[in-house]
Amino acid sequence: MGKIVALVSGKGGTGKSTLCVTLGMVLVRKGYRVLLIDCDCGMRALDILMEIDRNLVFDISDVIKGNCTEEKIIYPCEFCEGLFLISAPQNPDDLVCKEDMKHFTDSIRNQFDYILLDAPSGIGKAMESAVYNADICLVVANAEAVSVRCCVSVRRKLYDLDKNNIRLIINKFSKKEFRKNPDYPDLDSIIDETGIQLIGIIADDKKTIRSLRSAMQSVRGVSAMECVRRTACRIDGENIPLLIC
Ligand SMILES: Nc1ncnc2c1ncn2[C@@H]1O[C@H](COP(=O)(O)OP(=O)(O)OP(=O)(O)O)[C@@H](O)[C@H]1O
Ligand SMILES: [Mg+2]
Image (cartoon, rainbow, N blue to C red; front, side, top):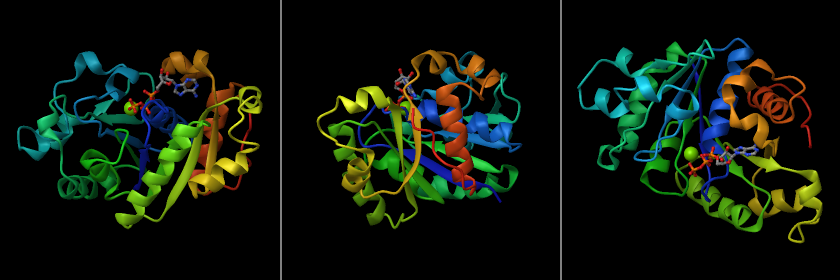
């Protein structure tokens, strides 16, 4: 039975969608079959990152409304065999409620080893749908004051929803830039403020992130992808150290 992982954040643009795809890619490299579900209704992104947008016809709301069968909404990623996408609706009125999302993810979780759900930023209804059936919630933040403070609201919201298995990922991290940041003397001060246990730190690495297709070829030795690989291993229960770039 597949493990369901939701990626959330308070502040927008912390890197959830990108991380959702790169985590999926490294989990596929570990030999797993991985499904990504875009939950950002009206603002979907994963189809573009996975280069599926041109072929996309059906989204998750089509199955919920009975417009098509389940197989029709699952799209394979051409540059990463074993990685699949279910897209979010483009129409915000087609938001899938949390009960329907739970029912649907339960019905397909035996077909995949991992199901990663990419939530929209914030703590609204679409975020609730994304986390409702998740086994683990990953709060994606950047090492800056606004992003860190937003994690506190997200953590409270997750506790309200009875989601207690929560981990923090600090994305777009640069040791050099962090040293210049007067808000935080060290990483522990960020972790303390969020109140969330750290599971990953991902390097700020715009060059690699620009093309996920080429990032797929070169996981080892490339800073952001090596960070993602280690984070995925930790999510998968392996006890390996973080890479702090
Ligand atoms: N590790 C990284 N290093 C450098 N840039 C990154 C990294 N991860 C993501 N980015 C960049 O940050 C920007 C936002 O990323 P992304 O769209 O994945 O964020 P998001 O949290 O999903 O945003 P939203 O809240 O709008 O859904 C993009 O330009 C992306 O390329
Ligand atoms: Mg996104």
